[in-house]
Amino acid sequence: MNLATQFEFLEDSMKQVIFIILSVLLLSINCFSQTAEEYLTNGNAKLNLGDKQGAIADYNKAIEINPEDAKAYNNRGIVKFNLGDNQGAIADYNKAIEINPEYAEAYYNRGIVKSNSGDKRGAIADYNKAIEINPEDAFAYNNRGTAKSNSGDKRGAIADYNKAIEINPSYAIAYYGRGIVKSDLGDKRGAMADYNKAIEINPEQAIAYYNRGNTKLDLGDKDGACLDWSKAGELGLSQAYDLIKENCK
Image 1: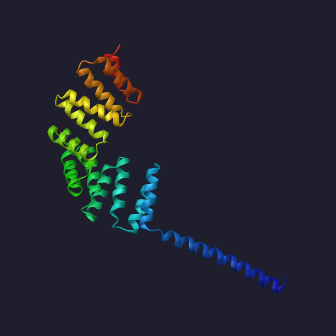
Image 2: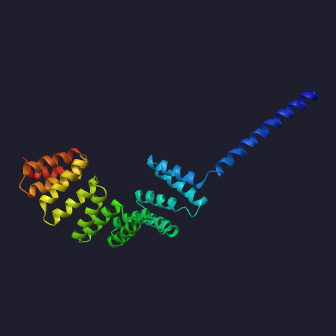
Image 3: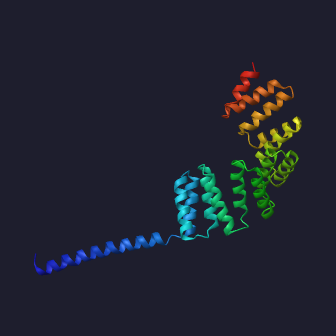
């Protein structure tokens, strides 16, 4: 190889090295330039696809970039709750509320975790706050109704379910919840009407068929009860078959 060729070889080699260095630098810059909002969006997409750990990793990164990102804490709390980490979820909701005391969704979500953990009073307090911030939150009224019912306040529960239905007349779960409370209060026909409406809105709601079957049995309609339990079983509620074996021929 002559001298000129050697210089050409060195020049080409240097160009390749420079190209590699620039590529690495550009890749690094691109990675570091990703914003907290972009990580938050990516986390939401991963959560929707069922990739909970991937979602948490992205929310972690969003929080690392912006420690005041209340939505990232809130969304990470949702994933932690879905993974069974109630305490971790509560900690994230607490942080979201610390950053933004008017964050209705964080109060609502924290109420869900508290209710799931048996803290009914704490759950009601959080739903109260969510409703104070957003008086049109049908979900908060519905969940507060359930918490009140579980705490023994059946009349208060009815009032909350009424409000949830007033805000969203197509809220099947609220009709179902109100039906349960009406049945507990002895209003079997009122319960039937609510179960009917819940099923009309969502014909795939197995638990509504199951409870409507129970109410039909209480009203003396055993054949109707058996049909409802059969439908509940078809929709995946296996305990309905126990009632069929016990009551239906």
